[in-house]
Length: 309
Image 1 (cartoon, rainbow, N blue to C red):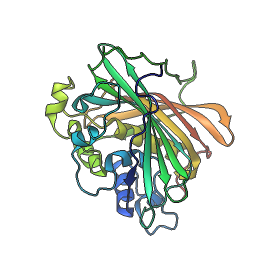
Image 2: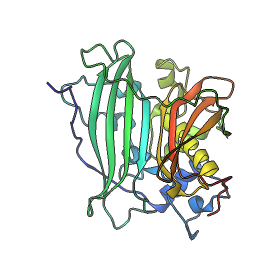
Image 3: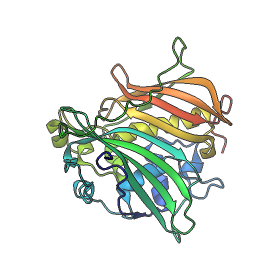
Image 4: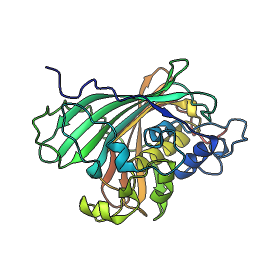
């Protein structure tokens, strides 16, 4: 008998974005004035930052604030419990960048098509739902990006489901000093700005949900740290050129509070897939715990790169 939920396909969801959305996203993840190709719509190389599609399952086709909890409960996966989306955090996210995204979806039709890869019962800690989400041009059928993600539903386990497979790990190379240390300073307002991209989970705006979940108050979006780190890596090693990143992933290990400084240690492995080198990284709160582990990216490395676009 197949594992519960596996292969279930959510109804396709139309998604839209404007140049304004692309500019906002780049601003919220730390793009700077020397990267005008992400920040100025009339730049000759104006481009979407590659990880932008990660926000589309939240934003969908709306330019207005959406009810996060209602949206999460819209479709139930058959044969698994009805998990409470008020107690959910990100587990791990991986993106594959297959085609450059147009700077606007205007006059075209895009859909996100999501299917369940697994629903895992981790016992008392909770349950994991793993999904694959493709961003698809409806007319051509081409897939622009593929996202593999897991959501962890806190304290919602022990329902008799499968435990799930062991995850593949990408630790830093043993005995090798980092090739770079990159820093990003958040502010008390960082999450309040980032949520305007379309991820309106109240956990990141007001203290009450975080207190109920044991975090002591509001925390940063896991995807904020995930996206800001991807930006630092592409700028440092790939000259800020969107075509220089092929894959990117990280596991969410611990929460980040608004105002924390993020410090990312990066190792080049020398292992290559075509022109792209495997890079591994760990991001931690300065003086505290790692918040992103299992970090791995495939980047076309430009020596001593600075943004040249």
